[in-house]
Amino acid sequence: MTIFDPRGLSRRAIMKTGLAGAAASGAYLAGFGRAFANTLADIKQRGELMAATEMQFPPFDISDNGTYKGVDRELVDAVGAILGVKVKYLDLPWTSILPGLEAKKFDICIAPVTITKERVKRYLFTVPIANATAALMKRANDSSISKPEDIAGKTVGGQKGTSQLEQLKAFAAKLPKPVDVKEYVDNNQSYADLAAGRVDASVNSLPNLAYAAAQRSDAFAVVLPPFGQPTYFSWVGRPDDKTLIDAINEAIIKTESDGTMAKIQKTWFGQPMDLPKTVPEPSI
Amino acid sequence: MRPEVILHSFWYLMQAAGVTIALSLVGIALGFVLGALVCIARLSGNPIATRLGAFYVSFFRGVPLLVQLLFIYYFLAEYGLDVPALVAAIGGLGFSSGAYQAEILRGALNAVPSGQGEAAVALGFSRLAIWRRILLPQALRISAPPLINEFILLLKASSLVSVVGIAELTRVSMNIASMTYRPFEAYLGGGLIYLAINLCLAGFGAVAERRLATGRS
Image 1 (tube, each protein chain N blue to C red):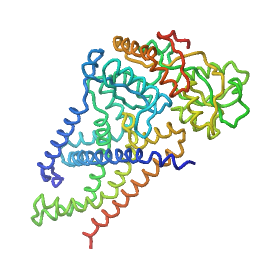
Image 2 (image 1 turned 45 degrees about the vertical axis):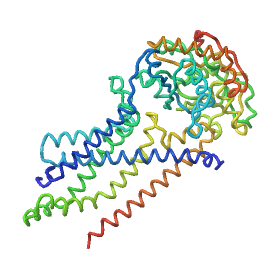
Image 3 (image 1 turned 135 degrees about the vertical axis):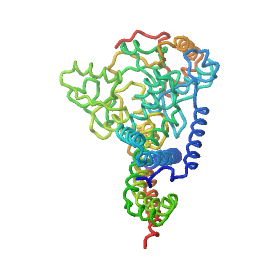
Image 4 (image 1 turned 60 degrees about the vertical axis):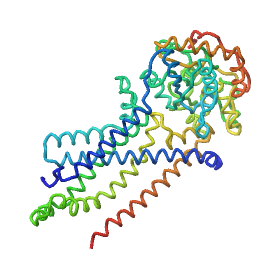
């Protein structure tokens, strides 16, 4: 097969392409490469806090035609202003966020994470940023469900790997008739199946459901009261970043005392709500 | 059905479509360069180059693109190599497409009867002339339909790069679905744009094939 000898091709053309490729990737590395460090001092020196979340969790994280909005955005901007740094946001799928945090792709996860006994062993939680108590949502025209216990014998959907889904399973185990629990990759699919009639209710935190039901009152209604034990959402950092999390905690508490937090809550939840000033002991 | 959901987010979808097209173009170009190199290595007759080429193809064709992307973006970072999202996305698409394109090119070159090359040598054609006048024109014609096919597959596979945080068409459709609580409209919008892009590609492929076919009597 000597006629396929590579020397027959223009070696210069290959070299050129290779060099251009190397130069291009060098430019990318220079432009996008970031040196990450653990401490708050390095973030301040960089002048930039790199925060990651999944922008598909209204009202906390919304990508409105490409503009990042929601509770987390407004709160982390306020925190950044207090710390004197700019905030950069990274939109990643939820399943990639905690691995990305451990791989030091960014400084903090600002996706709301429910404080649980399992998770406090692995991550450093900030003080709560919102209530995360588990509740149920039903179809607006479904009169067979009027209180949480009415899901006995019905099908309920929720997002896999969330504490709300675990709370649902514990709650369902105490009901007289078994509940068929369907697990979804994300809540939006659970809502879609609720609208389509494949599940009778969706489980999530009360603030998420209240917002969803308000946006689509034609389709959805929240089942009150919330069935879960009182739990809270926090942001999380790496376990060895205590100085950073301490500084962020201080900033979050400052937003509570200067009225910023109440303003954000009024915008997105319709009413202000009290939050613990320390990281609470996980109840679940 | 609320078509205004799509209309409201039309420019957002268009920007995302731009990202999808740009990523796919760069990915297919990188894949072509890599594929050509691997194809040359496999046909070189050098046993080491042949094995390396075969290993490249079996690795990048055998591991799912999603796993490759997660590996490049997250796993390498654990070992101190912080690959930016854009580089991981282009690299993942390019390396994986390179494996497929190498096989397309190899198949096309092998499809040219070896007697033609031998006859050209006997007639005194230079090596360069054999490539330029005999092998490449025919190989190009043979490889055009599978290359267009590969381009369309790559364009659809580019939806996977959302795992490294790039707002391409699928990711943006998901964003719109979650923002509006209207998944049907959001995915319908995204799906129609994919279809439109791929119909253009298929049309381009048909034109290219006709152009290449003019060499035939």
